[in-house]
Image (tube, rainbow, N blue to C red; front, side):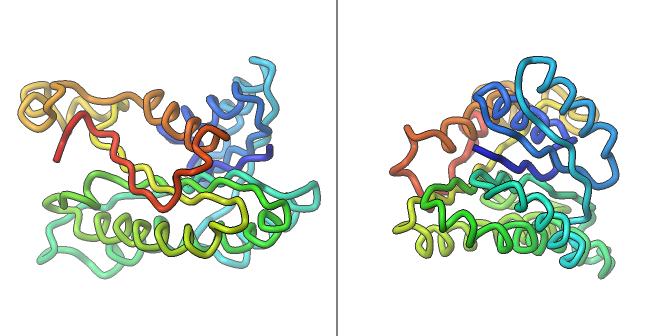
Length: 238
């Protein structure tokens, strides 16, 4: 199958792209500002015997996204979409600027539409597809300073449930994965060990590989009867 992972240059996106490559899918690793990083991930996938290409576009630019995806579709349908692209720009609501709200919504929510909508009809014609939207524990529990981010990701929850109903009879599943605190190069400063132990029942952060394993299961035939679900992976956080 041909797969597209948006935000593929980030920690979670890269892990997902690599795992899909290992599983034998032809992976398009998307990036916007960090295209060279996406190319590095593509080289890793190819060196491991997989198939991959890097693709660069701004998911908030509907025309650019549509044009780029149109070129990709010339080679055939994309049957696995992982909508992982997202940004955060944290500030408590009283001090939040309009552009902080708009940018975060644009990438996570409008980006989901701009990427997914042009790929649906070719996927429907194949009568098999998997759409995975990457959300966050913030969309479920809320988080101080992340009203914009939580709103954007919670919007994906409603979109996931509704789109799953539209596509269920076509052999296409739509699910949402909501990670908790996941290990990354910057995690130590934001979440010191003592805070992790207070917040997470399992007393540790998760790994991007654990998220990738969950996504790999959801796109497999073993998960063919799972659709419209918001699946948390957060070490037991409520």
